[in-house]
Length: 192
Image (cartoon, rainbow, N blue to C red):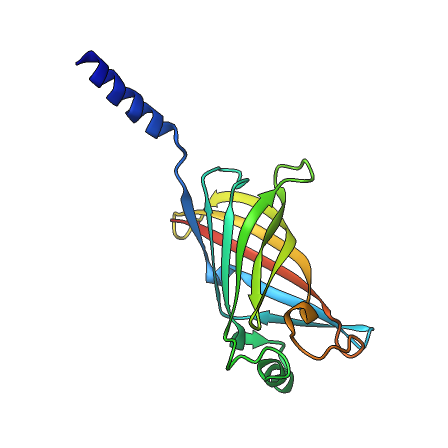
């Protein structure tokens, strides 16, 4: 009988030591997904996606084991020029009628700088029917209690470069529009 009680106590104690995974979801009022391309080699064109959902799961408070997911409504692209936005939605670029979503799912996160809040995040980016592994930089900007909602929030900034031609997006000529696309995402995430 004592062995059974001891066994149950060990199982209970061990299960409490296992870290619980926490889910965080983006606050759309305080999150932005932007991109920049070079036009004709001498000016920058900025745009953003107005509709997306992002989430994080992590069992560590420093997010060193975090897994990120992102789903973007590609038709929500906005560069503040209607003619250009219509072209981006067309078969010439994103072909949103056929490929309405862009997704990202992280596969690993590593701290390569020695700074506790800076990471390299690698994951599968799917765009225009093509999936490729990409690596970007992520900055964990901290956590705090949101004054309005009284919920805990975490802040992140992601930056990196992708090559649009890897995903068959847009014309191959890099003179008119650069094939390199700078990505920047700033997000606040609510703890669930």
